[in-house]
Image 1 (cartoon, rainbow, N blue to C red):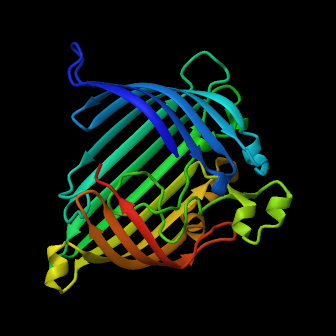
Image 2: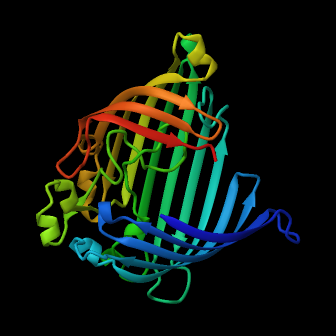
Image 3: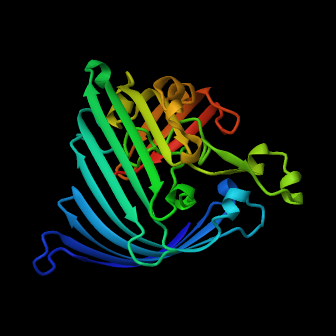
Length: 327
């Protein structure tokens, strides 16, 4: 990804009760290896930030999706081209944990609400997107051990005339998989260890071509489509090693279990939304590893085992690393 941006921050702007932040940016991101499209965003935004707890912003974005190789699946091809995003976004965050990199006590909560489609143009992207995150850390005492628990959920639904026939924009859907730490961040339902980037959830075969047919990797023949409803949860037990040098450097170990699920709204009906059906389709993984915290980031080297996955998923047992930043 590449980004070029410039912004202004006004700690006190006239009589506004919060700091004013304005920004202009050009953002390019390449998702060809996962979903067969590239994305370019040209955006202007303005927001009010109050005491790190409240953030209200308006964003106007011209978005361009392209498939340079011409291999995208049918669902991706339907979304290629230009679109305009006019959205209001509100974030409420409270973090009472004692550390952003190794929390040993406290709790955190974050809610992100986005309403897109503000304006008279019928071609505006129209959807409502909601994310929720909850974390808590409980000290256990022995070997400075701590039990961290977390749950995240997200939902995106279209609105406006004919919304039942509309699909949600792929750039705003939820994707699960990658190298984000379970414990630290409040990023929404994005991580289940053992699954690579965009490696969990609905997939679709790419368009038949010589390049795709000749590929020996079946994962390169499918596009990740993301989901409209997602949730993840985890339990993480951290502990000190019985070596003074490691304790002085705050290097410690942890073991964890995690679960997550991802759906597209067209796939759901009321009869399928039962606890038994949801659990039967939930992916589960567990693992253990070593954590190396620094002043800038938290590094984890974990061994992950995937207990449950399905045909479309890209889960894999083995070593996986992750990073987390307090910023």
